[in-house]
Length: 237
Length: 237
DNA sequence: TAGATTGTTAATCGATTAACAATC
DNA sequence: TAGATTGTTAATCGATTAACAATC
Image 1 (cartoon, rainbow over the protein chains, first blue to last red):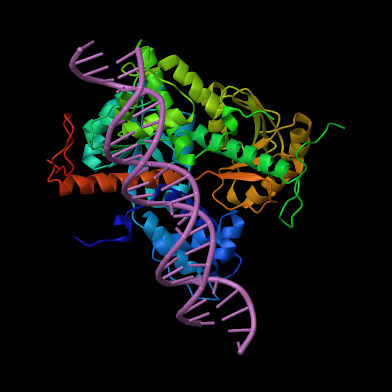
Image 2 (cartoon, each protein chain N blue to C red; image 1 turned 180 degrees about the vertical axis):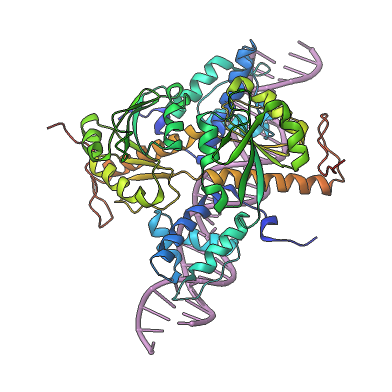
């Protein structure tokens, strides 16, 4: 068994940072820049340059002193590590607002993911096509998952239906579930569940805002950046 | 200046775990259980019980030996720490599929967030109401943000428009931006940006699936759980 | 009581940060 | 060349894990 980049031990913070680097590098490449330094990447996201350098090292990227990293090659290396170069097929249960938004999300294709079927209990939706994806009755889900060898199921149904849908997906043979319903799932071991809680990001943002406001007050409003900060306490005219 | 739960130093992993605990505790409470142990919570998400205990300790929760934690009180404590008990108002730019899904997301209200206005460049959308939220022209955004003292803006516009929209939000006075556009933003320091990359969760799920499959192969298919695992390599009949 | 579970203190581990030599 | 940036090695820090006493 050979070891690929994807096999290496991974850390969640690393995986969360890499896409941010990717976006920045992509932007530079679009501007015609051929190479980019870890310092530059770090500046963009208020991160220590050492972290960026370590991260890039950990995915096996090699740069040139003084010059930096070759942008195009770096994008390729991040892609490889993230597994964006291989296609994975998904199914989705629940075709409401959220399901529809997910089916219409262009970012999947760019990153090697494709939703190949949707499922809904609503007979009016069954047989229709949303963003190019055909919608089937939930009753057919397990069979279709099995026939198509799908490994990952997306749950975008209401909380009350989530557990049942998850079990049906597992019965069909998925080994991973991406759960957007804000509820815990009780599933056999061996099944990976990624609980998506959109609010969490918002809380992290809030706490960051809170901390930088505190830091601002502590330093008496002095900001180490050359850019003009926005006044924090505006008063109504 | 008094120190509240929200002021305490926070770790991102902690904040990501707490909502998962919340969902489990909520489920138990619905089943009529009055108290819940850290062990039980841990079992549900395949986590070390010690982590759960430490996390609960770090938010100031106190339990009773042998009995566990009082479920209702614990929910309240998590709410407090996460800041879900205070209302925060948001605006959103971009009312496409994603924006619509966000505006329709019921979870915001439950957790102290409220989207109070939407903005779009499409004149057909301006003046309409989506999920109870009124849509305005982007040109009015900065002014409305200022008048309403909004602190957080959500960006749900295409990549090409994201940077410009972000600057307009900052001009209006937001100090935090929740960016769903898959692109880096170049903003003055003092502005917190939470980059939302939905694909990242999917990659984490994939890597977890990969690892548990590897673990399964290494142990010769032996699973320490009493539940029946799903066979991994199914063949077409 | 006995035993499960909390609370607490110490040990380990891994990620982050620092320091500095190597090099284009 | 001089200086910026990488690559590498060591130090620090914080999160996780372990161990065990306290207690209901």
